[in-house]
Amino acid sequence: MNDLRPWPERIADREGDYLTPDDLQDLIRYALSFQERLDLYQVLQQQELAWIEKVLQQHGYSGEAESSLTPTQRLLARQLAFCLRSLGLSLLLGDPLPLRQWRCGAMERYLGLPEALRQLQAVVQGSLPAEQQGLLAPYWQALQAVCTPSPERLEPEFAPQTETAAPSEEALTLMQMFV
Image 1: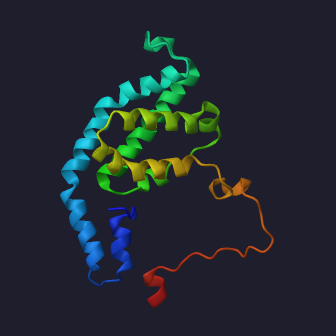
Image 2 (image 1 turned 180 degrees about the vertical axis):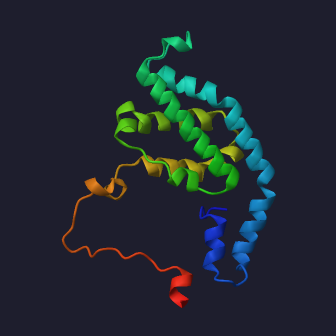
Image 3 (image 1 turned 30 degrees about the vertical axis):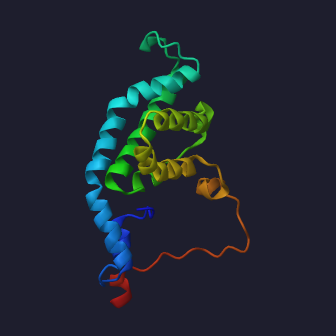
């Protein structure tokens, strides 16, 4: 299942028609892979603290006591846990929406989150079997895409204004189209 579009969106695209054979096969693979996704989700849940600690050690944490964490390290650990939990939830649901809703802002960049995420990915991928790494890979890519700075990802008030851009109109709902 390489297509990370959520199932409600895929079904809505069919406009009341049956699923295509490819979509049907993807749905069958998705259903059959639930136990594998659940197992990996539980591994993420169980190993979260150990993996985050390894990343924090690369950022100067000595590993002695949790009270020795600096405020910056605490915030970084919190953000890494949030990212890892969003990754796990997206994997379990087979839906990248929890990842796409997250934003990597100025504070996260100041904390060094994009680099820490790359380090976390290396730690996580290094401790998983190859088949689980492959299952998790598209979700890591979606998470990295959220952290990649680009003009499209800027907040609306900071986005560069173009003079040729027409005001965007809101799409009509089905009820508005036919009433």
